Amino acid sequence: MRAAAATGRKAFRRELPLGRLAVAMNAPTLLCLTLVLAYPIFYAGYLSFHKVSIRELRSGEYPFVGLENFQRLFADDLFWLSLGNTFAFVFATVTLEVLIGLAVALIINEKRVWLTRITRLLVLVPWAVPPIVNGLLWAFIFNTQFGYLNRVLFQLGLVDAQVNWLGSSNFALFAVVIAYVWRTTPFNILLYDAALQGIPRHLYEAAEIDGATGWQAFWHITLPLLRPVLAVTLVLRTTFAFMVFDEILAITNGGPGNDTWVAAWYTYKMSFQPPFNVGLGAASAYVLALVIGVIAIFYVRVLYRRVEH
Image 1 (tube, helix red, strand yellow):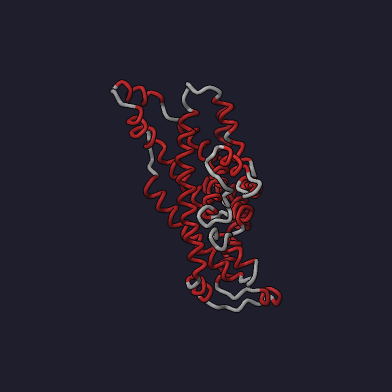
Image 2 (tube, one colour; image 1 turned 90 degrees about the vertical axis):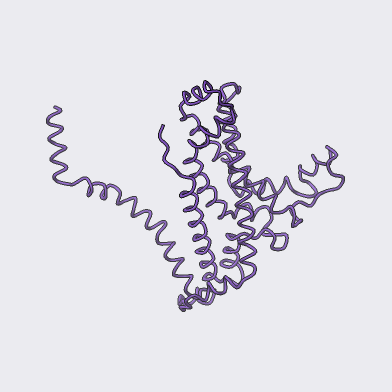
């Protein structure tokens, strides 16, 4: 039986080499990715070099304008304000996600912590909340008149008057950061938790025998072995943070003024609200994608290392 099966596999390989078999097996996936991802990307690139507004959308004719959309983009102070807000938002959210996620993962991985399984289940709750629902939830929490945050702070004696969180240029972006981090941190916790469980215990036992402290074990064992996972989470969380939209829409709607405009919000406003300049919006999206790509390459080159143990 085994000899016959081996003969059959050899005959199959002669009929279709493994390389061609791999291409054939992956062709449906590649086709789906091409239709779902590649076509919209190239079409957006096409639009970024053409004049596309309400008039052109009605006529179906898009005049070629070359780099005019990019020139207008880089000359727009609002774009640079949005990009600056985006970098501030990304830095704050990614930093908090990594620090909080790693701290919680380390805690729930300790054998001494009770109800660890329940803890792992509870951290999934924020991740299950849709972004727009999360934004509406936190918009109510930060509401000046009816929000729970002002009520709690007033009862604790920390404030003596209602704080206009969402109407203040000092607090509005901070409020969006808190809402976003609450929803997305469980993603980091789950990845760090899984990675921590894969670290061999004998490494810590050897370090303990050598007299290493808990901090030294974390710095020389845990952190180096988590470096590949840290690189992955940084790339993913940075990418998604650059594309934040739902929380901005639900919590501040870009306000007060333009203080919470981010790059994705700028792209949306330019493309789908007056002046309905889809070409300018496409150029903005491409610049944002380029920035994300450069940061992702930096993360991978600096942080990612193949670790064998």
